Length: 169
Image (cartoon, rainbow, N blue to C red):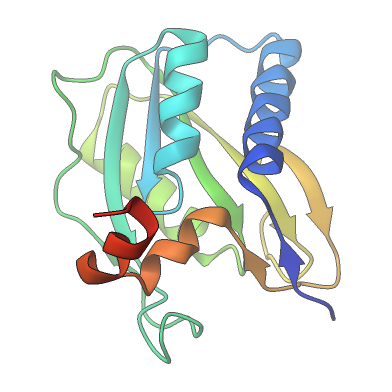
């Protein structure tokens, strides 16, 4: 199993391909909820492209061994958005589905907390072969379950003093 290294440009093209896939499906939705942190950039782009309000739900499961091992999923108590999200159909977005545990747990939680929501569909860039659930929309299937090195991960180990050399200050 080789690791998958993704550049910023490739990352943005993948998000655009995801947007086209959702659009081409013909499904109409009222709002987007992204799972933070991995789904933040995906949610932001899709919110802009579809001109739909964006909510953010913080989840965390990769906290052990420097963020490389999945543990118990934590789901934030509240969904964050500038105003209550409208409508009965929501698009739930994340960067990837690894084991599938997050989607399996989050969708029922959202429906229980938001009784107006009748349908939630999921969209991710990558679906790994180990996932127990298939998202409704995904761009790439990764049957060998590679570790994905996303471009924003460079910031995981940078600190403000490290930026001085990069920014010339």
